[in-house]
Amino acid sequence: MDAQQALADLTEISSQIQAAVVFDEQGKVAASTLEEGRADALAEGVGRLLEQALDVKVGAGGPLIQLEAATDEGSVFVVADGPTRIAATTAPDPRRPARRRSPRPAIRRPMRRSVAALVGVAGGMLAGAAFIRRRTVDRDRVDLYYQDGSMVSLSNGSPGADRLLPLAREILRKTR
Image 1 (cartoon, rainbow, N blue to C red):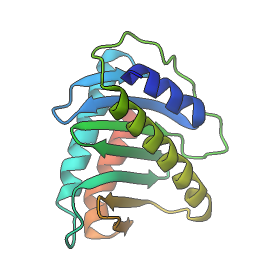
Image 2 (image 1 turned 90 degrees about the horizontal axis):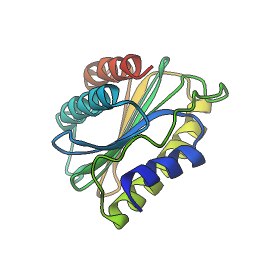
Image 3 (image 1 turned 90 degrees about the vertical axis):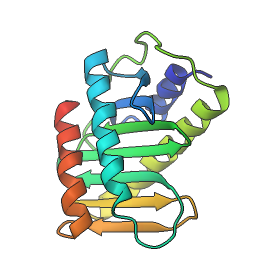
């Protein structure tokens, strides 16, 4: 399975996704549901969000592997697996239908089958779990998940969330 197919599968299982991108730790886009310029902007914005999230870590939880930033404007989901990242944005209300984008733009770089499949499945699971939680909690927050299984939830107004939520809102505005 290549990166473009992983994105097609992800958007198929999670209809709330408005935009998604697979990229590496240097920001090079492998596949996207967006046109090239917007895909690059999404990858760059998510890269900055991940950099800021690394400064928030408290305790020894290992590497950051997942991030969810939920705002009144929508949500940003990120899953990291080694050098590969997948990011997705959603509409603010999960009951409102998402705008579907063509999942078939030209593939820029083939990815290993196992990485694309793992990232696609993890992204779908994260998006589904987050929407269930989003229905019960209606406030801006950032959830950080670490490799050792620990999680940090930052609510609006906390020092870490005050740095991360504006970046998430900027990402959401750029992908509309």
